[in-house]
Image 1 (cartoon, helix red, strand yellow):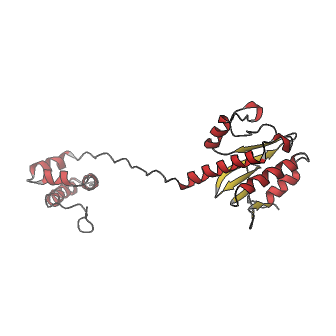
Image 2: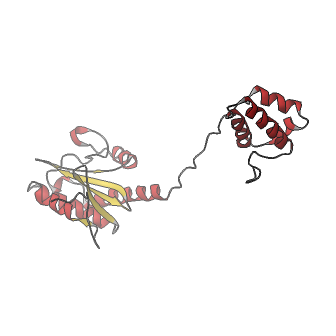
Length: 220
């Protein structure tokens, strides 16, 4: 029974046994191409890991997708992951499969190792891709901004009681929005008229004293 794990890293080298099997099952012409590409990626960094994703070999650097390769019936392909490398490939005029510009299959239909750029040039591309992943990993995440909750409209009776009480209007305005919201919701939750009136009286008293609804337990 096959393991459900999509990748298996061999300790010390970061090489996946599933990638060994992928190369072994590839057409005979493709095996030296895949082996050559694999070796180049590992030469670029000792921190390379391998995985099979979407049924094709991927190389990762510190957990980030870096590049990938694939074998087909009559050719192989090799490309880089991410918009940054796509821009680099386009700038260098690299053609993708079927003439498409970009990083996916950026070296065209590879039928032999001779179809690839020089080892020096390939290593340069791979190291550039690694640099992009390191920049993305080190970049601070943008701070999440929370939109303030809209003010809840106080019931008419509550608003009138605050207005008629000396100092309550100013004290209520001085409370934080969350404290004001708590008072309003507390009054709105009253199901009986008597309960509502009692809560309004209590709220006005506490507000005049500069207290929050839960002043006994916390500070607002």
